[in-house]
Image (cartoon, rainbow, N blue to C red; front, side, top):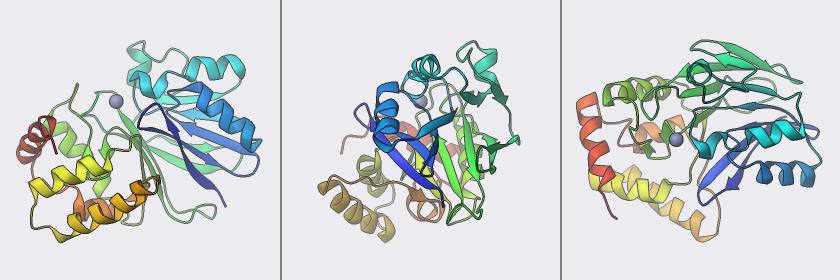
Length: 250
Ligand SMILES: [Zn+2]
């Protein structure tokens, strides 16, 4: 079976890794030193990199990883290559592309999810004999009980992107790029005060954080119940909630 690990980086990022006992792929390695130390500790060989969007805390470590290992496969959005932000991509991906991650042949489908940035893509892998559940790497589009800020795209684009992600199988493991869950849940309670699932989730996630544990991965089913952006119902309501969250202080 394949394992999925979230490597903490910077103050609240996760660099996700898919791996077995010998090989690994990483998603959004913003910091190469965290990845290199983890590979060394676990005696793993890095085979490739998946990138969701062009922000520095997601791509900042790629050059150093390539310097250490020039034969890496680097998959990222074609829009990033075209904009010149990801000159080292070996595979420029667009919506609907499917890659098979070596050495397992794990199929990964690309979903374009503009909103946070215009180049943002997510990676989805269906249930497979090597995976317990379907898997989603969603960068800064979908967070546990939240969504990314609208730096480049519109609320309409983010609403379409979240709607597509929310339609994935309920059991899909959601690997987001930041540990923002508690502050997102405090805003979620503000947005939906009578939603009991949100209150229950805040209690369980607070207990995890008190023990120094990650609240991730989430699941698509849990996001449908507790994420005020997934649950907004329209692009207009999403826009209202997004701007309220931008100025919300719990
Ligand atoms: Zn970002």
